[in-house]
Length: 349
Ligand code: GDP
Ligand code: MN
Image (tube, rainbow, N blue to C red; front, top):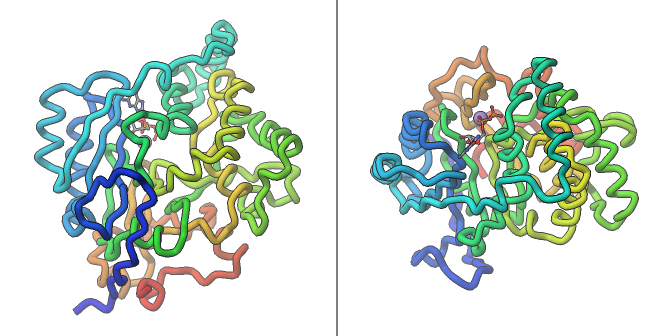
């Protein structure tokens, strides 16, 4: 018998006009994946794993986005693996390209310099489109207009523990807007001017700064500099409400005009993290503990033996990064005087 309690169903509070689900307790929430046709094997593996550890209990719809058309084979294999319904979306070109204010020669020169410096994805144009898309574009896809929460899942990732509660419903019940699991430090060479751009934005828009925010998560010196901590956004559960808000939209637009997605190599992880940490109250951010999540090269694995047993984890606790000294997760808990949620008592909600 497992001591893990499954939470009660919260009251239904779908705020959207159209309902995806006939089940009135569910909102318009979807699993969401950006993926290429060439990643079919990885995504099918990830789907099978995620169905086993979560979605076979809830049958959420799973939507797939691509800057190219999905092949027939891709769609068939994916459809067979998902227990909910699927949707395959071609991203409109204006959401995956250069805005007209970008100097293309300067962008080319930057990719060359990043490549010469051997920075990961330094020479890649598509990687920069992807980071800009994930930062400020994906929720503008017409098909996503009525989506409330999305859970971002990447091909090749894995959950090595069972997830025992409906995280979407938890977010809704406790009024959370953003959820993360792993947190680490960014390569500063990819974002040399992002912090100063963010501070400039906040000086011009001081009302964007939230009370009781998580500024201490991103700066150790009273906002003089970025400590490089970021929520690792290959795992991300969030409400589109936050990204569609005027505050975030103004921030993204400001960054986009600075050009750092192309003149540097700004990632969506630090961009989302800076916005969430500075522009939301800390209590609207949720840490999804004990998932056994894996995305190359880091993994989560609950160090507590009883907990691993209860969640049927298939991982080695010696490889856990979440509570490693280089992880930024400690900071999230110590800042708010919260106890580490990785023993048996803390998983019963
Ligand atoms: P990393 O996690 O930073 O190493 O970057 P990934 O290569 O994993 O890319 C992040 C996500 O974007 C993954 O879900 C990829 O499948 C997806 N992705 C990256 N580049 C492209 C692209 O050019 N086209 C499409 N359709 N998806 C992409
Ligand atoms: Mn990835």
